[in-house]
Image: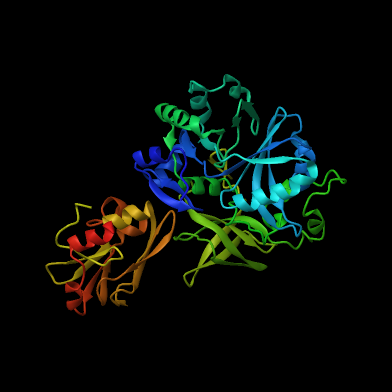
Length: 355
Length: 128
């Protein structure tokens, strides 16, 4: 089983460890709900070093990303920014979702853990044509520091480059081999630090001494769900296209000359008939879980992600449903028909409950 | 793990049973089970009057992470359920052997109690 550079630190903190795509990762340290609130109300720190990091060398990297990435990399060409989007196959199926960071003349890409091999081969296959070398950075680790107090804590870390204070949302900067980015997976302000593994313990220890609370993957999941952020493998797979996965906004066809992989297939999809991902809130007691069946007046659907929301104090989920859904619907939980409301997938905006 | 009450007996699937002075049986889940589950947010209990079979699912406990079946250590008729759990399921986390009990039953075969794991045997199961 793979271990991150912080494995011993997690064990020493008494973390419950689980196998996550063949990585031994902390699911929680104390209580998932307490950890969740720590991020919503203060600052939490996550070790997400299981994610895949890739760098690129030489060739025409912009043209390479224009080809493999469904969002348009030109949007961030001179901005020192990060851009989120999907990697599609020729059929328009989602191979993965990922973030590409671009600062100075360098690109760095972070994608999921379970898709590492698939993606590396995909990048390598398509990089040849553009003379780009793909470099998997398994020597990198990733820390996420998130929450309303996260940014203040980060600025108090001794080794931190003081220029990070100028980063806008989705802004990023390299400091040597370290990348600092104002991105995250919680719906809160904060930073992701993609740094060599040998530097990570020191950053982790300092963040903890400054009062950042260690957060496991359990709370990471409830935090991202409240923020309405998809989880690859749950909310979308290779069998889904972006329009039925709430990723239509990441498909950029503004540049009509740009031929990205999957474009032709997407053009043939009738978006008015596609299913949609919608947020659901259970109105009765119980907990929504993936796989539960949904019905509404004009169609049906399926729960993709479901959990208990510590902020809303009720069960919420993401579901893929037929279009034309009204405000209310039904979900089947263990042969009982229970009531749900359909809402925006963004249950929270900047940590506050959406109206 | 050292605080397992001596008067309880267990299933290897982490449910406990206690014989009360009136001969009824109280059933819950172990401290080890609540720790494995993490924060418990919902419990589905059997109906009073319902018959349950030993080692069959009688209740469902849901933590933030997942739903798990609760198996009945003994057969019998459910005579009371812990209604406190409806609004405060987290009591199972804080008091798994006392306030966090699930249901009581009139046992149909006390021989089943004797076949359950002793606290020491249960601890061995958990440590395997």
